[in-house]
Image (cartoon, rainbow over all chains, first blue to last red):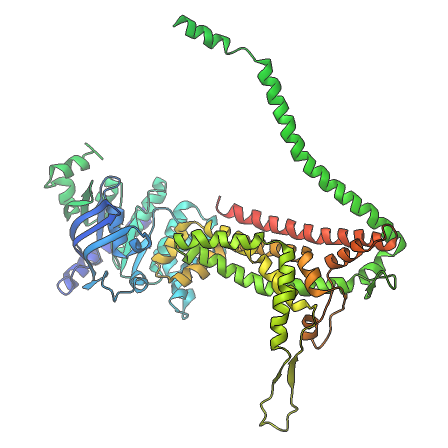
Amino acid sequence: MINQESTPAVQSTAETTEHTESTQASRGPAIEAHDLSVTYGTETALESVDIQIPDRQITAIIGPSGCGKSTFLRCINRMNDRIDAAAVSGALSFKGTNVYDESVDPVALRRRIGMVFQHPNPFPKSIYDNVAYGLRIQGISSEIDARVKLALKRAALYEEVSDSLEKSALDLSGGQQQRLCIARAIAVDPDVLLMDEPASALDPIATAKIEDLIAELSEEYTVVIVTHNMQQAARISDRTAVFLTGGELVEYDDTETIFENPEHDRVEDYITGKFG
Amino acid sequence: MSSESNAARESLQRNDHVVRTERLYAWAIAGSAFLTILVTVGIVLALLGEALTFWSAVSPLSFFTGTKWSPIIDGEYGLLPLVSGTLIVTVCSALIALPTGLAAALYLSEYASERTRSFLKPALEILAGVPTVIYGYMALVYITPLFQGILPVSIRLIPPGLDPLPAFTLVIPSLQTFNVLSASIVVGIMIIPMVSSISEDALRSVPDELRAAAYGLGSTKYDVSTKVVVPAATSGIVASYVLALSRAIGETMAVTMAMGMSPQLPYFPNVFRNLAESSQTMTGAMVQIASADSLGGVTYEAMFALGLTLFLITLSMNVAAELVRRRFREVYQ
């Protein structure tokens, strides 16, 4: 199993390098925040964050509970709009457009920025209908079968469910449900995938599968992943942002630098487990 | 210190008084619970006894297949006209209540702000608390005259220029004083709160994670409501429908007042006559027999046969609703 999966991982590294060489000059950052703050009523969840998230790489966001990392993630696709008390200030741009501009439709934005949640949340529909949902609401009617199959394959789930596409998604195991949610998110071919602790509800084997999958997905997608698990951030991400209590982005750098030679003592303390 | 530990030791002693009181409570509350079962069983037995006496005088076959209900004048005990009256009222009130009730539930659960919800929901529930006799005269005094002002209406189905074709005209006749249309409308209004309240519970119990997933995929609010929340709550919605229908079938006062007492097989093909004229439901027929002055006799017993039939219909619908609801509970646990 491990051998089978390691081959595409190697390819993906090679391809990512190619992308970096050929396209980075023309590509700006996928997501760019400037002086971004979020408050819930009187409580500050995010304090003046500045960050540039590169295209087609994996950016990990780590930090202790309540540091605002999930809030930041939900700012990117405006899922914070659903929380009445949340007030966002500052600028956050996606491919150069300020997503909080009045002319931006959050529905259209979310079609280009997919999201995977902490707990697997498949719809109580068949496996097939789960993956096809995003296509159908966008009015895509051509080649639904092929697109569903492709998404399931990319999410490394197809072989396990190819005979039971009409079965309820709720019959799958937790790990399978989470891969189904990833398949559902990538079926509509977004530019960015936001992942909010996608493996925290899963066992170690299912977690390993999800991590392999994320590494492969970064060939085509910009991945922003919030995680509690520092080893996970170290294993899979290219860049790491450390948020600490108070919603402050304390340090943001290449993952290697953050874990081996962080600039701030507080970050080092957090990473070495002295608090958090 | 030592006196404290003594007290602790003493408290281990069983207190007979407490034990006796406990036992008494248990008996009292168990008695209340079993009393309701006892009453139900008693009702069923009473219905069954009288109904069987009736069916020994009038054959069940002629009761269930007879096409004329005229117990007092002709001694005819055919159930079908009453079933027809009940069905027409139930279907027409369902046409009003099921879509409106679901739409109201959807608004309350998915669209309304907390503030709007906080006054709209109790207001809807007040509608359920209006005594049915009031609905009865709303139908007689307001709704029927309102429609009498508009009807009859005739609509030419083929435009005047097309002469070779016969001039098909759709005629909606004027309403009689007692008519099925007004009765159906008030029964429909009466059962809206039942549909909206139970459906809303079902919609709200859909986990918010599913809404988040749908919004995350770029759904509009309409998509989330109709393609995710409503399908996920289907069983609860169906249960609310079945319960509301069962209420409509059993509704008595308003239909007796609004639609009169002329049992009627359905008119065909002029279906509008079914709404414009008087008819009678099973419950209406029972009221009529009960308010006649003779006790005893075949007609009196016929009331019990009707009652038993009605009870079996509504009981099976309530059981169906409960089964559907149970399936729905399993999904998220």
